[in-house]
Each structure stands twice: as structure tokens, then as C-alpha cells.
Length: 223
Image 1 (cartoon, rainbow, N blue to C red):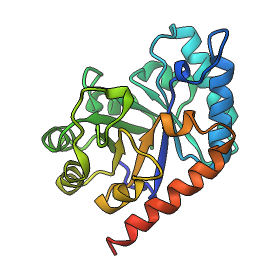
Image 2: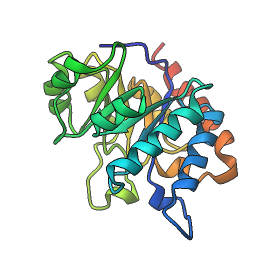
Image 3: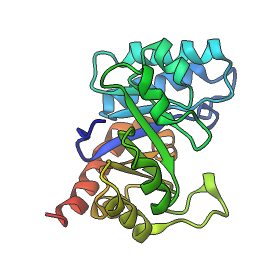
């Protein structure tokens, strides 16, 4: 298990259906976003494109790895351990219904990243106690259009989760430049987002810079 995440650790989660590509399968637009995000300094890119067939998903991940191999950005694949291994990704992000982190560790390469999504402090404690996870993504923290009708856990729920576990915690759900300072104040190591990056367009580099600055302001309150 690794604890070398440097705050603010920034994770882009992909969803090519939201890139606004008017034609085709959106793959080219997706890969362009991945390349731009790596240049902008995004630390982790989680490829979450569950509707792609096995061959296409492996091809997308392989291309993403190639596009980012001269940067510090690491590619992680949502759920699909087999694809992540075959395409040379840096790790896998597990869902509640995924294979267990303990089983992944049995055949994963050294220093491979294994993370998991959780939705409450209790769940975070339960899954991290086994010692096989490198990080958790916790949410939904703030209101977000992708989880309409779901009550957010808010700052208090995020802070409680951070205090309850020893593994690094990323916040997810409605994280923006205007509220990311609170994420820093919670003690989380970083955050994951979709909309804030997908909607940034040509301003992606500036958005990433602003997110880092605001997060760091919150983080300073912990010193």
C-alpha cells in the first residue's frame, strides 16, 4: 500500500458523453482532453467509459498511457482490472461491485495503484481496514447534476471520513474552484471531478491552477 500522494492530488474522471462531441464515438475528443489535462498538470486520470467494448476500451487506455508517458500524470482504469493490466495503466479504481482489492493485490505489479469509491465514513473504515487500498474517493460531497436527488455528505461528512481512515482520501461530487478550499480544509489529499474539467475548454490550464491555489489556501488552515 502506498501513501505518497502529494496534496493537492487532482484526478480527472472521464465521460466522453459529456465532451460535447457532435459526431462519432467521441474517442478523439476524449483523447484530446486527456492529453490537455496531462499538460495542465492533472495528476491522475481515471478512464471510466463502461459502454466501450473490451477491445475499444483497451485501445483507449493504451493511447492514453502513450499520450501521458512523458508527463507525471498516471492513468487509472475504472473497474476493469484486466484492461488496466493489459494496457499498461498505473492502476485500477474499484466500485462496490468490483473484485476486492485484496484479490487485485495477488497479481498486481509492484507499486500499482488500487483505489475504491465509498459513500460514508463507516464504509470507508470497513474497506480500508484490510490494508489493500492506496486511496479512497469519497462522495457525493457537494450537490452535483450527475447525482441529482442524492443528498450530499457535505464538509462535515468528508472531514469525518478523512479522520476515520489512514489512507489518502479524495473528495468527489460538485467540486469547483468556488468550494475546493473546503476540501483542503477537510484534510483530504485531493479531489476528483468530471464537469470542472470537461466544461473548462481552452481554460483547462487556468482552471487547474486556480483549483490548486484554492485547495492550498484551505490546506494552510491545518498547519
